[in-house]
Image (cartoon, rainbow, N blue to C red; front, side, top):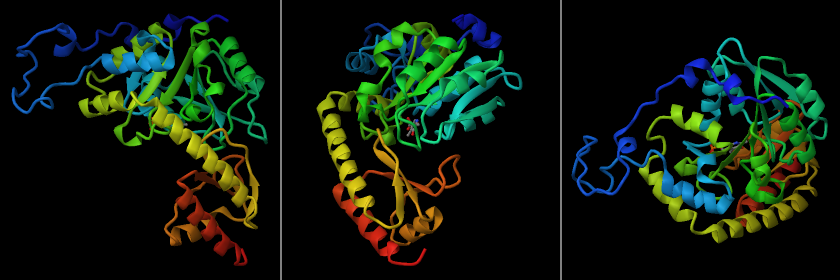
Length: 349
Ligand SMILES: *Cc1c(COP(=O)(O)O)cnc(C)c1O
């Protein structure tokens, strides 16, 4: 491998002099803050939040076993995804390669940044073929997007294939692990240090039950992280989010217990779904959702909407046929879904 971060960083980003906020220029202990034109009243909300999010990063560092200079925090995972394009891809010239089907935000971020987006179909069983992905790259390919467990298919990608891509590609490999708390043994976070071109994305939006506060994480070499930090909005993580995240991260057992419950309910849901005539196939899932091949995705989707139950129709997505993506809910919610599908299954589709 011939990875060189300097070579793939856009020139304007390499030479950028970042904005320096009041909170950047003074970080020590003090009691009188007259440096940021804040209102002196209405504490603590009157103060700008920590632009480096140090307390939160220290907690995450302990939890994830990754040092703080290897952690970037964003307004959801969407922020690091967008910043990666802005830092490394020259609009109108560079391209990225991604598996298909996968999470829709990579393409949207590519389109916004005018970067051509090359899709490589997964195999019929949604497994990853490293050779095919690598074959789709050329000298203007700056990033490869992988997602494991993958959305909407639900399966974790083969680690050997993923590592082969990381090892053989000269650009960045962005591996989105948004659902990794549901199968932590499949994470590459423990080998992050071995790969200078690997960027892992994780989030508090799924297993941690914090989608509302918008906190996404990127883990990578300190060199990559410092480039992202240099170009982010100074106060990208607001005070409420930082405080709530710090609070919740004290209770990893709560998250573990939710994960356990959700995985148990997933198993039950799969058992019940597999008995229904409208269900043709259930794909293996390592996440908190399942992809289900049905007799008619659109009709079932609409019939469920009539019963105030919303699932995701994935029938327009590559390789997905007549699939619905179903999030595992509470036992009661899952039961309502099963009852509704039983009713629907009694009609002629
Ligand atoms: C849900 C999801 C995310 C989370 O995005 P946030 O912006 O952090 O809420 C990221 N990637 C994938 C593949 C997802 O499905």
